Length: 76
Image 1 (tube, rainbow, N blue to C red):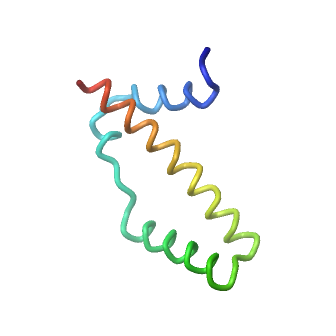
Image 2: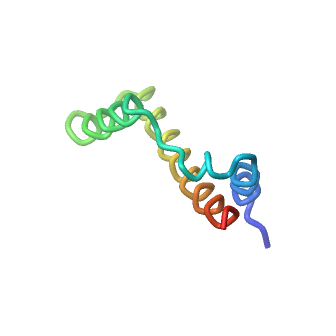
């Protein structure tokens, strides 16, 4: 059985070059923005746009972690 998200992960990970996917890191600007959103969420809450932005980022981060793990396997 293949989970629906695995198809996307396999597509991302099998693209050339897989090493670039395995080595991908978000920019400092992105890291700072996410850290800000998380801090705001804990301290004073987020508006709906910020909440949506953070949720999308977290979903993409999870997807990229899975794709990076799969890419590392394909590289070996």
